[in-house]
Image (cartoon, rainbow, N blue to C red):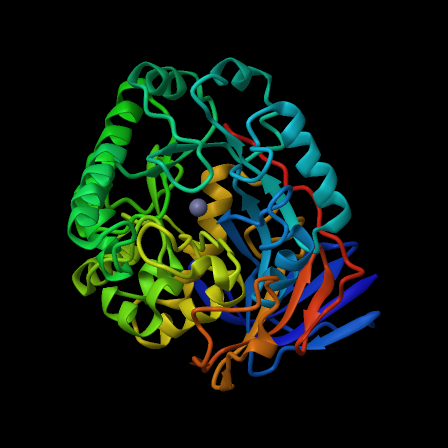
Length: 445
Ligand SMILES: [Zn+2]
């Protein structure tokens, strides 16, 4: 099967240029300036569009197994395909938790049958599974996920001695959720004294405070420095934490890196009035100043990766205040178009966006043969059209939970087509659910 993508504007490795891509057997085999004369089984006309490497989302919660009323691998990988995301790394706080080799294997078996884009699964650290790290197949998993603050799923690791052992023994990327539980509990107790059992959601950022984030992130960075661990801190949400990361755009040379999530880059506390608990996430969405500083850090290199923390809940589970409403929101279907909106607003350049969403996740986690438009790499490609307005409605949402904080939002960019391993998995509003993704492989050198 030979495919030609012609006439598009390619964005790859810091360059934006007009070019054509030739695909054979699921791989890119050539990128040419001149349109080739040869005949092809399929020709895709990308005139007027931008052609990017497929997005690699390093942070999703697809809820399978065990929490499939909220979401599952089938539904959420369809949403990913529609959003231009061709690869994802899924987190371990499902049921059972992915904290044993058996649970990890089960997820790979499920995904092989149900995932419509490429997949990989994090292994979860607990207070007592450090001894199993050495048995993990590093070629198949992106890394170990550590909750250094109680988030949903009860996987909190907070014993100092255990943390030291985890940082010492993790020989692959360690991705950490950093929020200090003691500070959060203290703030919550104070709020409950004043407001009762379920304080209003407007207090979420006061309870899950800047101090809680900074204290925990400081601790993680100090441990990583002590043991030489490759640390990737998830969803940075405050200006203060950014000071802990170096403004270095070489993600391979930097052992301590940070992820920003689309929700924290797009929303601020001011949106809470309109959207309430729909945008309640952990860590909380903070002030416009924090958002401004996060956006600045996208370009100077203190942020290395943009992910989604795609975390669907049923709408009824999002009801209530700080104690009752579930934290997390679906985002994967709209992450790329949201970031393209920030490109239009000149927050960052389109080539830097591609670096943050495709190249750097590949570099940082050692993804093999993906994340770039390069000969001999898998043909994971997204074609996006600018100046093509459309509105998010309930009908456009593919996530199983059926709602989105972006409902009613009008985008100017549209994902026109997504190719995964050279096959069109999404085009013109339709997912081809006959297509299955591949297990991603890694080289953690
Ligand atoms: Zn998460």
